[in-house]
Image (cartoon, rainbow, N blue to C red; front, side, top):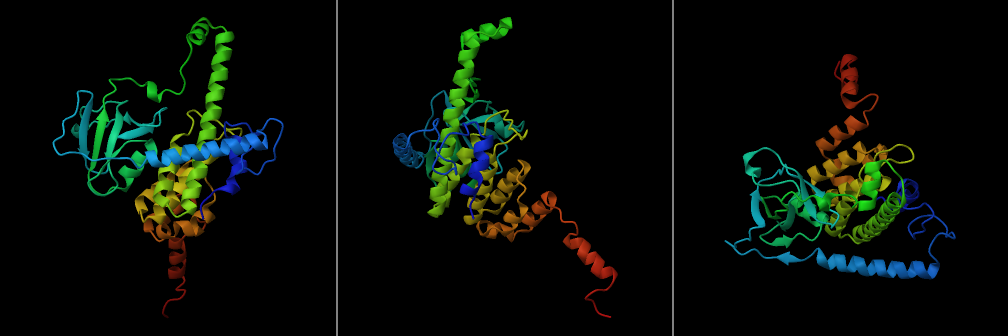
Amino acid sequence: GLIDASFHARIARTAIVEPQRTRTRLSMSFTSAALSRAQFATARVAGADRRSRRRHQRLSVVIRADGASTDADTYELNLAKPIELKFNRGNDGGAYVVFVPTEKKYDGIEIGDRIEAVSASFGNEIWGAESYGQVMYAIKNRSGDIYLKMKKMNGDLSALEVNEKSSAFKNERAGGNYGAGTKEQQMNNYSKKRELENQRLDMFDEAIELYNGKDYDSALIIFEEVAALEPKNYMGDDFSKTTEIYKVAQYNIACCFSRIGKEDESILALKRCMSAGWTDYRKIRTDPSLAFVQKSQKFQELMDKFDEPIINANAVKAFKSLFNIGGKK
């Protein structure tokens, strides 16, 4: 079924978080560098409170009034699928435009613009864009046209920047020096990376719980968030360019989409998973969580691209035909 505990040890070795960091879902013992048991329990309660608040926030709904006017900083779009715009998760958790096609229907959209509201996955409701994962869920699951309320950012890309650099760091970098400013910047970057990775693992845990409770839609929203939090320019100890948790998140996204009967979306997530380095093809072919999509011709074609058998089905048929095996004499 879904991938969870069996991959955590590998995730811990390649992720930004310190290997000594102890979490209940990692098969690792407490060390002097880890939280005490009391501190750890307190942190887990706080994490549960945060997850509960996020659960309520992502369900907020905005009802659009027909003909409603927008202010000068916002604009509305109605786009037919497939949408060729590309979005990334901002450092505030929102969904931002990072690529705009040249087609006329995308005129007026600029890189850096933020999604404020999106049509619900079905029906006439409009959802407030509370998170990147929620927006991607709505867009991928909706069958009809997509409504988007966008906020113009006028070229401001700060929400897409990884880290803000201090003036002392900039001055030292410009002068080719290494000093207190550079050291402070490195420490700040390290702390932010640790905090982000902890947040990512908390979200992963929450999504696993939701999936196990058969709330596949809510699990999907959070797995999308986990995948979107992949650090830029990542390089693992084994020179891999993607983290283990990204591969696992994409695999689990495929499982969620398969569970709710979305073939194309499940296939796309599997493609991303295997393109990132996933090689357990036997699990993909046999996992009951992927039973729906495994029946698809597109699934077989995708698997043959990544896990091409030595003798594929067509070769077997040709061999049998050549020697009239199983045919009439």
